[in-house]
Image 1: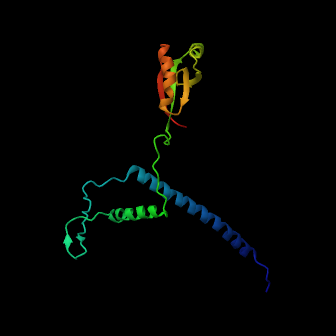
Image 2: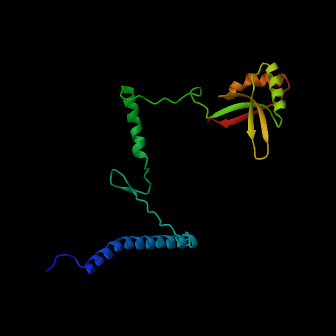
Image 3: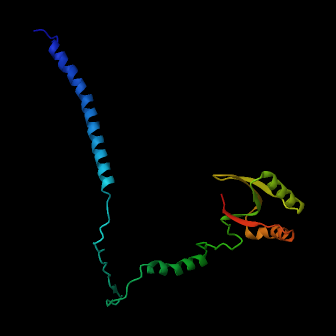
Length: 189
């Protein structure tokens, strides 16, 4: 007997190697088809809320007093926390716990930033003229460009100011010079 593989056996082995790759490809196509069918079904039939169903009624557990009697009073779920507060105060007095201090109004930082806008112009030369007029009053202004969908606007602004009280001196100067202005309030970046 000859141990060399026959031509027919070699062809069978080559056919088996291709079947694994073909099986993975078919499985991938079937899985993709199922996913697409599920997505199509969900899109055409979105889940809806059932309006005729009632929510289950929650039963209340009666309060059992330490003497064993039952009362119809509803127990406060926060009572263990509230009972703990005096103990925390006693520990703070002993020096074991540092009590938290509430910040004063001067310590609270504003979440806003303020500007004084002395004008908005479509022509940059007019904005520069307004800036020069403010400089004669001793106010340093900035010109910023704002682009909208249809045009460019040049804004003449004083600031920024961190607090609303910081505006008062510059507002007084503008009022005494009869220059109209607007106060702009914006979120801090």
